[in-house]
Image 1: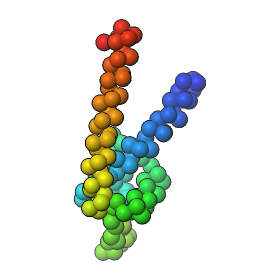
Image 2: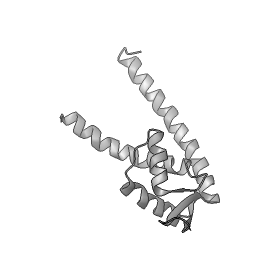
Image 3: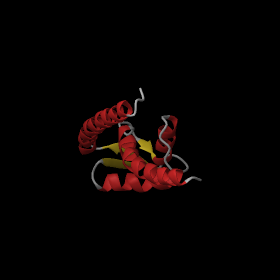
Image 4: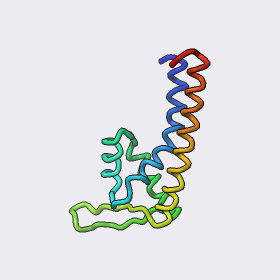
Length: 119
C-alpha cells in the first residue's frame, strides 16, 4: 500500500464518522433495529460495521435524539430505534449544515480544477 493510500484510509475514516451519524438519523423516521439499519444503509451506499453502529445508536438515544422500544414478540427480542421530536429537529438542522458544507466544498474543488486547467 502506498504512503498516499495509508493517509487516504485514515482521512476517510475521519470523514465517515460524521456522515454515518447523518446517514443513520436520516433513516430513522420509521422504527428500525440495528441490523436492519446496517442493511438499509449498505443498500444506499453507506457501509457501516454493526460494531460501529450500535454504540452510535446508544449514544444518540442517550442524547435524546432517538427513542427506543423492545419488541419481544419474535423469538429474538429486538430493540427498535426511532427519531424523537428533538432528533427530527436536529436532523433538519444538520441537513442544512451538510448542504452548506457540500456547496462550499464543491466551490473549492471547482476553483482548484480551474487553477490546474482541469475541467
